Length: 599
Ligand code: F6R
Image (cartoon, rainbow, N blue to C red; front, top):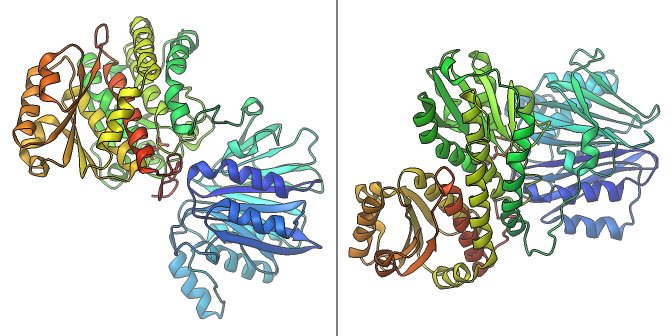
């Protein structure tokens, strides 16, 4: 979602801010802008559409400045246009905002009644107008920022460039914000994502909730304050981020494809990491738990569904798998003997964070299966099981899903007080090799994509452990190919969706060795209604060959726990190649954001 980068220092910060914003493009956005100081005056340049539109006007004006803030906007309040793009500014301040001001409507009405004028339809401008009013009442910049922030409801982060001082102020509540200093302390930066700061800073700071970061360019330091303006220790610093690298496509046409191809390597490494990191037992034990509540959104929720059956069977514990956006508004029947297990790639998904906070209030034990260290979820949970997938740039999640499911299995053993990887190492080796075999020859998947990409719609079906993969396959396809796709439990077809079947509808049937006959009879039902059938199932099976229009044979031997991941890699490639046929923007699909920081 929205991306923020701010720079104050002794060099030209414009290229730094533009480079930071370009690194955040993967998060999804619809307009971009910068504000900079020139001859002590604030200027704003902003443009609807891609960052290159903004870069063109910045280059034309040959802008240089050592005090710059920038933003990529993903519209929430107000349509996509130049006026609603950030920064919002006036003579005294420029501000950028990530999140939602929930009481913006009421505040705006009050301010308008007092004669204040608004130029945009955004909630963010309310912050600017109120900040300016508070500053003009005689407060210092710092006190005006704090007073304004305290008047707002909802989760947001703001970065403020004031005319009156050569400093930047940044503040957050349950929205991502980091800041950092260069090696020589001469350059101070703030951002919504540490990825934007790689190579520009030596030390990254993660401010805690409701903490003000003061990027003090006169003294080359960053100070932290609480909402009463007192110095605060509520931040963490992380030197290790210095070694992060900026991702490139490494010869692949898209980040998504590169990330699909990274999976064998990541699978190879993860068991080694857990083997060495978890010699000790963890503090949470399955036998002490009433229920495990697995909570996430989208693909992360699907990873949770993959874990449910196996957790119930092997841990003999009740397991609920919950959509975060629903769980947060129920009155969940949970107890302090429950575990809240949050799955998230980014660790910043607003609904997942809200559920974590809810479970914290209800005294649950909190654990995460997580990719991004230093994220909000990372700080909220008592135990974090990192998936070590590296930066995922493609908006459609691929490698993170695979690693979430694998780490979920390691966690299952840890909850049993057992070694996390011992039972899985052999099978992971098989999985890695099988996935590599698929990746080594994608010609049949490409050919099928070419033949099915104009069909009317796609129904993905699977039973039992392949049902979550049917959901995930359909989600991936609709996300990146913009086609109608639905995932169903195979046994559910005749309860309604079978009405959709005709000659133009493709059914993508996921068949494992388990429940083979039952799944086959569901496919017969589709065949009887003249539906087109693509089967992904056990190899060398003449029945599957005969009944299908297309057949992707897989070798399921020696796979048990991880066969759904194997099938899912085929789904990832199929979506990718169908999207290529459609010519969509695969890495940055329309309307989507990588990290959904608003609910
Ligand atoms: C789908 C996708 C989304 C995310 C969801 C949760 O490809 O990427 O459905 O899985 O927005 O995001 P995280 O895992 O960051 O909490």
